[in-house]
Image 1 (cartoon, rainbow, N blue to C red):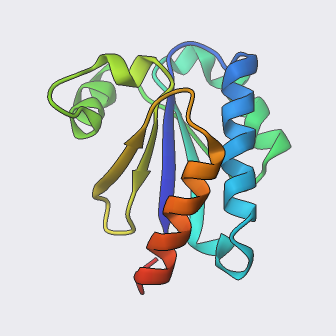
Image 2: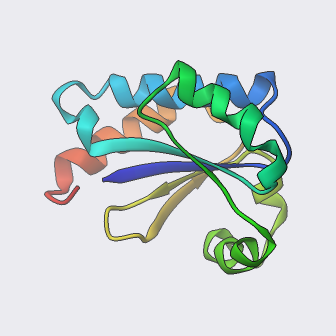
Length: 129
């Protein structure tokens, strides 16, 4: 599946919940293709997993993961473009293709319309996922 990923540093505040809701609405807007898209929220602090789990209660199809320090060191380089780690802490959204390749990244204050347009084009052009 195509996967929207975003990272939560410590707990899911109101802006985190709004972002998750916006991405979920983008997923649902795909109609028959909604099953080809999913949302993954990764908390970089396992202690904050309970606050991030609230997202799963509201949106049951969302994948919520907590990573420890060792997993964080392995995971983060895969999402860094040009060595910039700051994008991960700022609430950026990443789009990963079904093969596990990072396809696109969006700034924290992304317009959901842009997300919807991009994923619609990719789903039309792609037979995978």
